[in-house]
Amino acid sequence: MADGTLWTWTVQRFAPKSPPYVAPEGGFRPFALGYVELDGEGVRVAAVLDVPDLDDVHIGMRLSVKASAGVPRARPCPANPSATAAAEGPGGGTAARYEGAAAAPPPGLSPAPLIERVRQTPPGPVAS
Image (cartoon, rainbow, N blue to C red):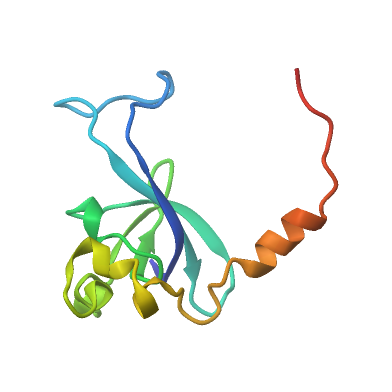
């Protein structure tokens, strides 16, 4: 198991193609996926985010990543009980995460270098 910081994430709101996806008992439920930057390694790992509430997911949250059959799984670090509360900021709730300082990514997680690299990359051939 390794700890890291959530770099970016999204929510899968529809069932993936089957096969290879096998729906769990009770049917499909939306789930979060993200890239977790591992501490001290600079490596970003794609993982399913095992969180009780999708509204609690935010860039910069601390996660523990564990290898599993298939895609790695990540859950909030038990050593960081503020994994969700700190992101809510003053006033709390989802909206507070996207206003003012709460919206700024933690140091080292700026997407600016990636955006600049994408801008400088010449387009490749288009598949038909």
